[in-house]
Image 1 (cartoon, helix red, strand yellow):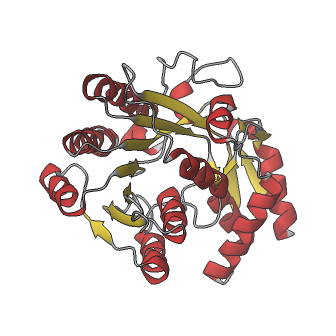
Image 2: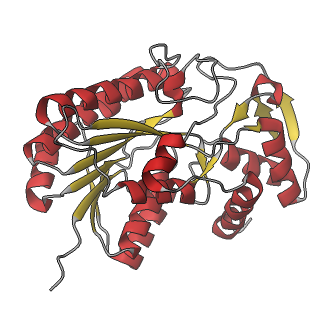
Length: 328
């Protein structure tokens, strides 16, 4: 008789990446347990729609509470006993962190500490957690490699993600907790967040509204399609760092390894919609970086997979979803 699939906890399952990953895990036969606080950083309606699909298609229930509530989290672990944890819940957004710093401390630092403590106490086999390309801050050497110094973040959001990596390293070293940090590079695709560029640009262009284009459209981003992110994470689940080593810790870039200029990204949206954008060309915003570019050699070596979906393909799939979901 074959062994049952392990129980995997996915935090932030009502979020963009968490939703897609939970669907994939459900399709592959894993037992998925999940939680999300359903905050109102953006309209919770889309989170509720994601939740409904997870429940309908895979029987995945999302428990509602905040990771900063340690007692609730300890009770959750005691009831479900996850053997693997994929921690994607966090307060997102570089610009939002400038005006709302305390939200990031509670979610990204207090919440992450609680996850680490529960993983330690329950002897979790592998903790994978979301970091961000924003940790590279003002680095100018391209492409960004995980061996680069990342001691100069330029937003509080980036600082909390760098702090997560340091905290994970400490737990890996002291308690032999295997951890993998995932530096995601500008993830986009169907069911994306309404605060992200592709969503905002599509909505505005369809409504004949103008869009704000920062750094006069000269920014370059390593846009990474969500299915490529899910495939990368899925392949990493069984590949925990060796707990027999002194520190079972690693950090990996998850990016498309092919930066695209923002104006070209917008032109691809225009082409797909058959409409021209009205652009307000703006200076670079505080906290933003002019370019991101992922060196994914370590990811490819470990998994045999390299994200490679073109922006034309990814944008097309997003717009097909958007038009269907909003009856646009």
